Image 1 (cartoon, rainbow, N blue to C red):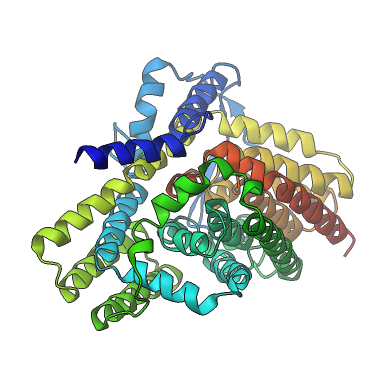
Image 2 (image 1 turned 120 degrees about the horizontal axis):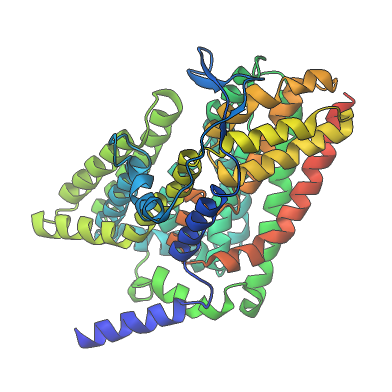
Length: 481
């Protein structure tokens, strides 16, 4: 037992970095936003129900200043709790996402107890030997399809613990695994075509059909996917040839010990009949999840129930027994407890901003800035305004409901199509959410992949620059079409 604790402590030391943890970064952002509520004047637009959107939206021209509600020490201390649920009304915020993460961890813990994932990884790597690089564009395309069609985001948290060991087994690093999932789904959301949580809601709020502008958004989707896949493949190839070029080279050995633990003891690549059945149930679980989210209106509670039910079925099929089944489930949930806490902290930032009533003031400033600009300047300034707002409102649907009713009508005065405003909004939001520390999907994915935020920025900043130039060129051309 002492040796096991010593080994665990050594692994944590090897994984540690000098950069602050996600918890410290997020709590620091809560303090920063609280400080802004003392500086930025409080204000509000009137709200009216929009039947197309299904929510109340801001009414243009109704902004007025209101009595300030600066957030103090007590509000900051309550913010992490308020990130999960409103402590006064008990209305849920991110508690459903956090519970989903815990159920997901339990499901993966039970699956790992069968040994099927370990053996399956070894078998897959044996079959793909020499062709591993093609996993990257194939998987990124699949995630991008999920992003562009139904806004795949929180659902991707289920895939990190599964795919990162596969990527590392292929000779790449943990950052490559995170990038395949986060950038893959992210570029899909950035280039949303029929995504109901971004394109459809924003178009309805802008009072245009969501099909308007779909060609330009398809160009952004396909072009962006090619750029991202090529970037990740180039990085992965360099890392495989020389591990010292990895942005997480210092954690290289620790990541392999963490994610490939037990793999080296497996000499037989052959799956048993029970393991094959467990893998089939495993795959069907994700297929059912995607079907439920995309066509049945499922969200976190039903997805959590699905993973709980599948864990029980897998445990019974694998004959784990009651004690090993429950023990494996609890151990797996414990592994993702930190991710669940991060989700609440990230949401706490948004809660502070909403309670301080500064979101509408920021939006009103954007409205004033855009007035009277010529076409080309208008759409590019619009893009950068949405970039700035995305840091405070990472939710694609939340940003659409907040900004589109106010900013989209301004396009009429600049002689720019409202569909182009929608494209600028979703491109900006998708771009920022590749790095946004207030977005639970980013900090959650990095936490599962054990990649620090500074190392992620070191990897992705050149890609962000390329994508920014690409998007700016496309929407600028769109002005003249």
